[in-house]
Image (cartoon, rainbow, N blue to C red; front, side, top):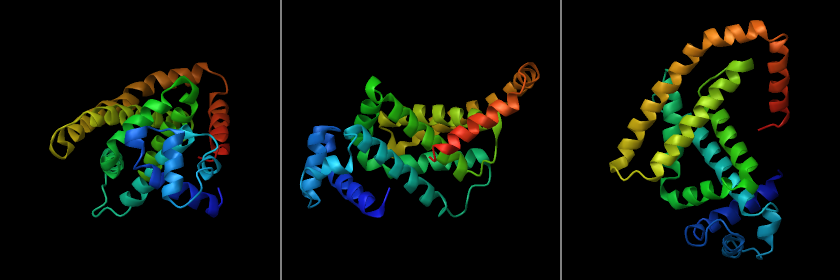
Amino acid sequence: MNKANEKLRLEILNAALEHIPFDGWTCHALKAGAIDAGYPEIDAERAFPGGPAEAAEFHSFLSDRAMVSSFFECEPMPSRTKEKVAALIRIRLEGVAGQKEVVRLGLGLLARPQHWTKGARALAKTADEIWKAAGDRSSDFNWYTKRGLVAAVYFSTVTYWLNDMSEDYQETWAFLDRRLDDAMRIPRKAMGVLDKLRTNLPRSEGLFAALKQRHMARRW
């Protein structure tokens, strides 16, 4: 994405955020955002040729980027992996706390059958950014296992957070800690099973390496 196009997308999306709680993730909201940002409404289509679903995915991308940037400014920096993952998820949700309805409507849009690939890609990218920021250096099957677990924890936490009316979202953060405790137990229990699978699946390491190369080729 060139800088001029990203500037256009940023300005239209940021302006459209004022309309989305009322109009939803719609072409109308994007066109209104373009006009508010000083562009002709047709530029909304130029910025997001894939329509509102593409804009919702871009919003998720921006939230990921802000999450990572804020995390590396933490003082003191969390030391344990679980604490890092928890801090990253909390930072991401706190960053969009003023946009709850935008997030709720975006999840609904990306859950539709015609947009599920964008929704799955956005969730996978968020999980990947969380693990990379937490310092994960795993490879092969473990790489996918960790991201799958964090994706599940993150999604369930977002769902809980959207309905949380507690002060400062304390119930959400307690829910997050419980889900992470559960998730951290799974890899340890699974190691024996995975070892057996590796011995019974010929060339499994080559298979996982090929899958990893395909992931890297997408350049998330």
